[in-house]
Amino acid sequence: MTDIIINEDYGGFGLSDEAIEMLFKLKVWHMVKEDRDSGITIYYRDSIDESNYFDEYELERDDKELVEVVKELGERANSKYSTLKIISIPDDVKWHIGEYDGREHVAEDHRTWY
Image 1 (cartoon, helix red, strand yellow):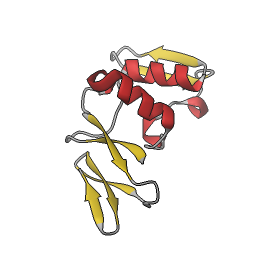
Image 2: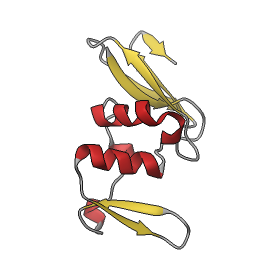
Image 3: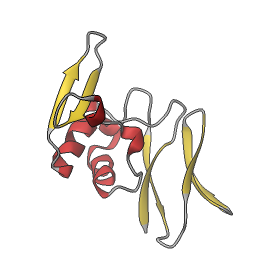
């Protein structure tokens, strides 16, 4: 089975600061944080440079470390606007993530999982 992370509520995929920090540790990435006046923390790999910006939207949703983070942290992995869920599908399925207003599902041409 393949485990895939989706956002099961409206608002969009995202990770909590705790989840991002755990992900960096599991991937053995050097983390640099930039705390903005707005209260938002921006994460970078190695140095504060736009080319090193960490964008959780670019993560493969079946990334083994991402799945481990969500399994271990549970609800604490959620961002303010996300409710993350692990979907398990057969290994041989070619899949993609579909979404409507940020609420996601895993789909194959003729099957959908929620």
